[in-house]
Image (cartoon, rainbow, N blue to C red; front, top):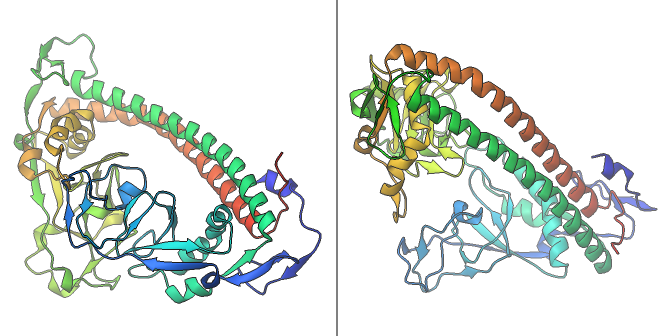
Length: 436
């Protein structure tokens, strides 16, 4: 932030009468987005397959666009393919209004391809951040967020002379690369802290807290030895699992006073997220009582149960209630011999990942069933020891969580600085130097 303040300004400015642009250098032009870019909406592919013969283009899912592996391919002959590095605009959904660099593939109907004209392509990419800020703010509070096409086309952009566009783009290329490198280093630090956490948790749930206790072989390579007095058994003897109900989508409500439906999209590793919400009418809950979740329940996303940030299992908090359990999400409760919180601990470990991972290989949309969850064999100490392990890990993990939170806050500050730097440069609030 401080560095932005030290960069000199232009000699003269003019008022644009535009809230988002404010004053810009007096020799810059002001043009509407529609005169600088064309917008081509994608369309929903008719033929999607998880099998690729080597010639089919990948379907640009959000996971794939953000660097993941392609899981589906498009068999439509008339599919419109975009190339690597093109600018895409997310049109519908929780990320609507976000500009993103494309990978080669086929965009869906929720994404638009943006083709800039008469403006340097690198400068155009950076200046899209100003449009994104406008579009993202305009979707707040909407039931299903989406881009307003008219607002996009009529949004105003500051356009410097071509030579300055290139100077600004080169400056931002260098500076944002430095910021991204600093962010990557801190993200690696967080990754290492999380790995250390996983090692400590796994050691506690496989060996307990007493290093002198007699051990026995579990019979499973990734589990190793466990305390002699512990059981090693399938989870079905320790849990009650309930798959969600198939609520009919045509009867969903958009009224916040109705009951939230907990869907797979709401389940993230260790927390529930409600940025995408649908509701069920209060007058239609008779007979659905068993699908109401309670504080302390575990829920697991049964489609794509594992994502890059971990296994999608979390505990229901008071703030999540009331909510109903939708299909493709499972509710788990421990019985008298297993604390529900301890079951969450087991399901969040690599023990569980090593168990179900091979089952998902080669599947287009990975899915885990109730029977497969119940079939997971796990080391189970007596309830008293489960409680002690949970208490120990709560204290131990707090140290790591504090470091992770601190590092994450540093990352957020770097991201804020990057945003401020880009916005300041492309709107002329600073006069960037010509790089040698």
